[in-house]
Amino acid sequence: MEKKDLAIIGAGIAGIASGIYARRAGLTFELFEKKTVGGQLGFVGALDNYIGIVPGATGFELVSSLNETLKKMDIPPRHEDVKKIAPGTGKITVHTEAGEYIFGAVIIASGATWRTLGVAGEAEFLGKGVSYCAVCDGFFFKNKDVCVIGGGNTAVEEALYLSRLCNKVYLIHRRDRLRALDYLQKELTETKNIEVCLESELTQIKGDAFVEEVTARKKDGTVFRFSVNGVFIAIGMEPATGFFRDVVACDEHGFIISDEEMSTSQKGIFSCGDCRRRPLRQLITAAGEGAVAAMSAYRYLKGNYISS
Amino acid sequence: MEKKDLAIIGAGIAGIASGIYARRAGLTFELFEKKTVGGQLGFVGALDNYIGIVPGATGFELVSSLNETLKKMDIPPRHEDVKKIAPGTGKITVHTEAGEYIFGAVIIASGATWRTLGVAGEAEFLGKGVSYCAVCDGFFFKNKDVCVIGGGNTAVEEALYLSRLCNKVYLIHRRDRLRALDYLQKELTETKNIEVCLESELTQIKGDAFVEEVTARKKDGTVFRFSVNGVFIAIGMEPATGFFRDVVACDEHGFIISDEEMSTSQKGIFSCGDCRRRPLRQLITAAGEGAVAAMSAYRYLKGNYISS
Image 1 (cartoon, rainbow over the protein chains, first blue to last red):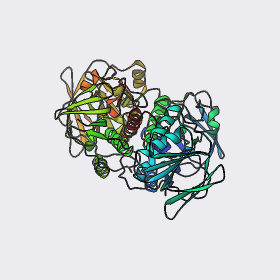
Image 2 (image 1 turned 90 degrees about the vertical axis):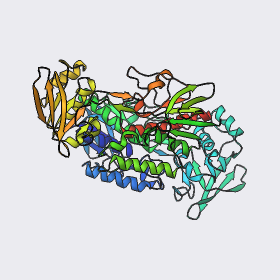
Image 3 (image 1 turned 180 degrees about the horizontal axis):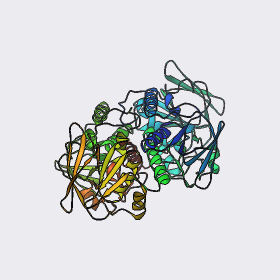
Image 4 (image 1 turned 45 degrees about the horizontal axis):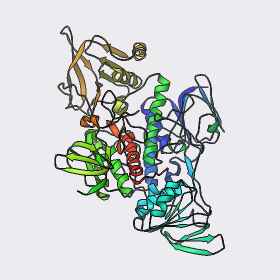
């Protein structure tokens, strides 16, 4: 079987960035994507924080532009689901449901998904008031009332972040106490426009075109309603790292550990984007990391480096 | 004097990204820029590797879109030259030629400039065959003849990188030996389509609309010509870190040392983009780093963090 330089697993923005830089560097490669190009990006309603795109564009427009770039650069995504990767001596075998391929290096850009609540209205109002990321979407809710669902560090951080932009923030958590770190909880109690609602479970998200109201049920059975325009669901993220966890070192949540050059614990395997542990989970950081991963793979494959 | 949260020094793409994320996070800040918004980006002829922008756009178009974003988000750059930053207890004083300002945190995004040769035609053909970055522009010269000027690691790496894309690469160096590391020189001699020309100084770059020919002079006085379409000048980069070097730790070339969260050796001071030591010097990585720096400054200022 013909050996190619590089396998890129996942055609979200990180994997696409890797593909663009790999093509420009003259590497031979495959870009594997089991679902659709752009990953979750297609569902992003308004895209206001991708540097270089004027606020007001949609995620769909960015996906279209990425697809056009792939076409222009002759990078056809291979729609196969990668089932296994097996590092060997000087080669890495990639198994998909369709066959086996041999590569010199692999970039894992398999992404992650936000954990969902599964309540009525959650899917329907995604991008219309329902969000999984305060840094991404908080700005759309300036001076409005919002709620945050969850009780861990992320939920409390998101509530604090939103409290500085929004009029009022309800933090709704199903347990009788928060799991967040002490100093976060201390700041929470000092923040006047946050109201913490414990032992409360979100049951419904309602509205017309956009979210207008949520319903929650207290442990004692009481049902109450909040008028809010935003619902931030902060119950964690699930990295799509499944079987990769047997091949490269991951943190306790399953995110791949890689350094600033995107090198993992396994020689020849790199990772970028949402599937890796990183300081800031944003489209623009994923794109930059994808470029770095491709050039690091290039260096690894060619035995030299490009310092600029 | 009123204290603001954050000073961002430099409105290249890294500093602009910091400004966008700072505005969205509700921070008060100033974006200082002594020259023009977009930095060196305005001179980029064709922009084929900025993820999300379809190949074929120009640097000028990206600058326009960044300017429009700044206007939409009400971020007017303050056109003052920062002369000094002085960290104090819980505050950092920024001195410009126009006055003194007090901030809680500072992001240094002051950029860097490529060293130039100063030969006839160099400025004239910039973006029309003259380039300072093989990873940025190499792809435009696929199957063409090019030359690389320089004798250090970067010059040899760029020659090797280009050898895989181009028909023929001349490596022109004024000294009698290369300064590059042994393994790079070894690979160089093994690469058939690279011709090394030592003791040769570039004297002129000529062409019509685009580069067509360069002239070099041998140490013995012989003058010779190469027909090339591309001239890659790889004699190094100068970080615009001047007096910052007294405030934060820098590497031996003057690039600021900061970690993946963009924190420098000085509490409350962050750095991003071309002025910092980093794995890959590209627009897309600078943009991502700018976003990270802003969120790290936010965490520092607010005493908490956003993990997603």
